[in-house]
Length: 121
Length: 121
Image (cartoon, rainbow over the protein chains, first blue to last red):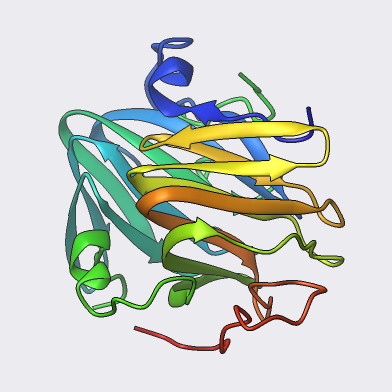
């Protein structure tokens, strides 16, 4: 059939690694990715794409140089292209990311947290 | 501050009209829209954009010419560009749509259900 439902909870069961986004869908030139995040990520920006964070389960914060945005399930935020940000989560938080296909999770920064891109589940 | 959390429940309180998507965010050239849907929509397609449906609250179905996809909260689906589809919901269902900015809700079809585009909340 043309359209197949994608169940977030079922997809999250397919991986446990944190800070390692998995692609679940493509819309035009954007990828929809699920990620598990916990702890403190690196400061980075994405020069060529805005990045949407949607919290599916849990709580997290997005640090910007001019403030901190707290996000919980049922909330989303747009990190504009080129703007430095740092995701942080005290406990594991499950999120949906939407960004241009081919976007590295650490953007313009190389880090031990830089994840392999292109992992579909 | 750069990034501001967008709370879906709070945004849904700002409108009650069904089949009238409201824009809540832009990511690159895509709009994120909230909509309340109930009843049977018209068959239509979007020649120039894929369309993502994410169910926030409730249940709905997306009819395709080759089958029906049932969707509930915590699930999403991509309706590919150019593919006819018809959303249906027995009871009011709250959804998040992601599609190219400037996309009409009835796509290539003009209908009494064609909504005004460009309504931000």
